[in-house]
Image (tube, rainbow, N blue to C red; front, top):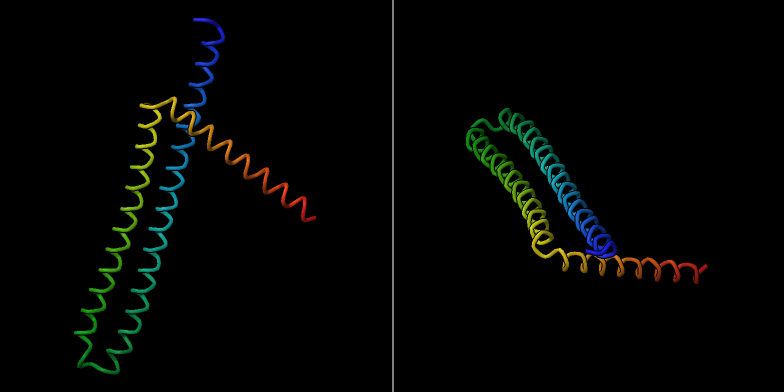
Length: 140
C-alpha cells in the first residue's frame, strides 16, 4: 500500500473513531438528561405527595368520615404518578442507549457511509453558520 493510501485510511479511521466518540458523548448527554428528568419527576412526585399528605391532615381534622377513602385514593394516585415517572425515565434512558448502540453499530458496519454522512452534516452546518453570519453582518 502506498503511503498516501495508508494516510488516507488512517485519517478515515480517525474520523470514524471521532464520529463514534461524538455519538457516544451524545448518548451519554441524553442519558444524563434522562436521569435529570427522572430526578425532577421524582422530586415533583415527592413534593406532590407531601402536599397531598398535608392536605389530608387538614381533611382528616375537618371531615373524619371521608378520610380513609381519600387517603387510599391519594396514595394510589401518588404511587401511580411515581410509577409513571419511573417508567418514562426508563423509556427515555433505554431509547437513548438504543440509539447510541445503533449509531455505533452503523458506523462499524458502514464506515464509508458514516464518514460521508458526517462530512455532509459538517458541510451543511458550516453552510448554515456561514449563511447566518453573513445575514447578521448585512443587518448591522
